[in-house]
Image 1 (tube, one colour):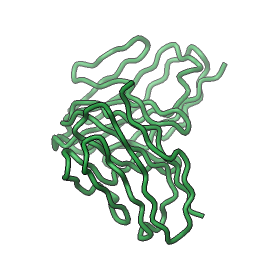
Image 2 (cartoon, one colour):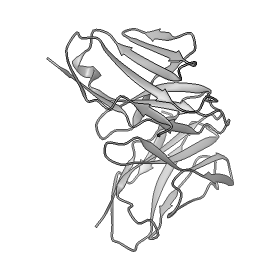
Image 3 (cartoon, chains in turn brown, cyan):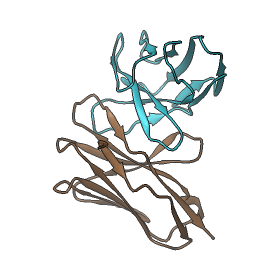
Image 4 (cartoon, each protein chain N blue to C red):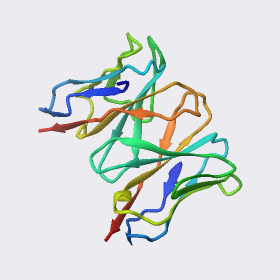
Length: 111
Length: 113
């Protein structure tokens, strides 16, 4: 079993749709959690950090459930520009900043 | 502008050759990382360094080597011992610790001919 597992996707949705991605992690000692966005053939960029209380940034909402060891990303009112691969990232709490990346979920938003 | 630069953007190598990928950052970050990404997969950690003159192996260090002689620089050498080196290589840096985001360079695409 992988340490970080994401919905395999791909997700193909129309503009304006709401879409949710899930990610599970296996190490209960994990300390910090992130969602990164990666466009085709580009480097990943931070989309959101994920906090225990949940956090929202415009159309994006991230939530963490430590008991069930999963994090989620909700995108409301999808735009064409949201088309990308979304990477779930977990830091294991070694204080080395070592991150484990999920394989990513690809989203395509269509007109 | 602060950021991370990687060079070259594309690199072609013949089997049996060693190649060195450059990574430079001017963010004054202590920690630097090298990842490998294969098509349809996430990033896998090759090596990381938390401080100058010190580095640790990641999950897939075999066939790779690094150095950290300066805070700003963390070059990666892909040796002939790496059996399947064709991949997208990404360098990242962070202030350190577990709660800071990683900033990535634009990557180097290595192809072995």
